[in-house]
Length: 337
Image 1 (tube, helix red, strand yellow):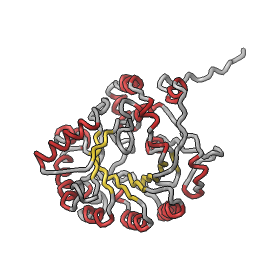
Image 2: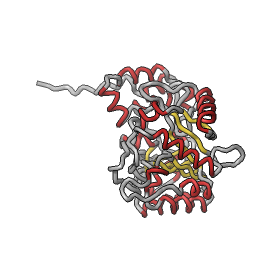
Image 3: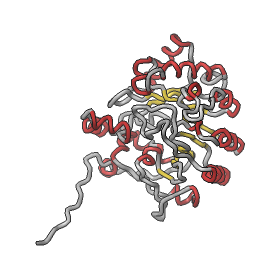
Image 4: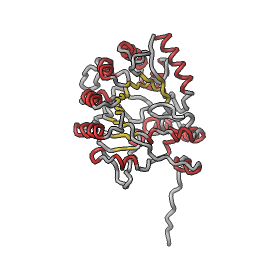
């Protein structure tokens, strides 16, 4: 008997197919930003977290890895920004020194700050992190903080009981240092994620609502609101699977595919670095272990970093990329179209 191999059927959510149908090609444009997930340790366990971060995670970027990243930043002036994420990046023991060194190199430093780490401190060592607002201000760090909604019920539903009130207190402390205050030059940008399998509402309208509600009810201010789509991977995908909503959510993303949003995807201007020094096209690919491949086809790492190989690579897309291109688009800097 002859057994014929049957080629696997492509997923109906195949992102590359969406691009082919429209005659689109999305090569890298540059590497403006080095985004580094320096630890998966976090003081929270958020329902939508694509990193699966928690107080029990132990992954950390090594001292050697940090030194190599700083070397890359120093050697390549075209990489203008360092974007530190996690987990809660502030829980890495070398976080402060990393930030200070990058600032000394003239780089713009962004920190994905969950707000509550200020009050909770280190979940294992109990080291206080209440100094963070002053540290951020001294180094003129751009602070980017998740706040799922301007009401306690929805925020706590996604991020845990009591998180909203802690977030309000943390924002108050940041405002006290000038963050989010007009004319200070200190940016406090908030991030909205829908609570559930929905697309974000229009960014401008939501920003106006956030600004009004936070000012009137809490006396708080911020710089900009970013809207982000929940990515159908890891913890959020598990929730979708368990609740029987995965297919419906993917259909929603597919139906809302926007070529203009696709043209502005963040992987065209940044690369993501894992705690082990491996390089990915974005933070979402990193969590799925879809490694970035250089122009030669070799997997990229910071330890043999070649800018030309990185900028000439072919970006790896998969089904989840529909999350970045639905509606007005979604990126680490909010809407893309």
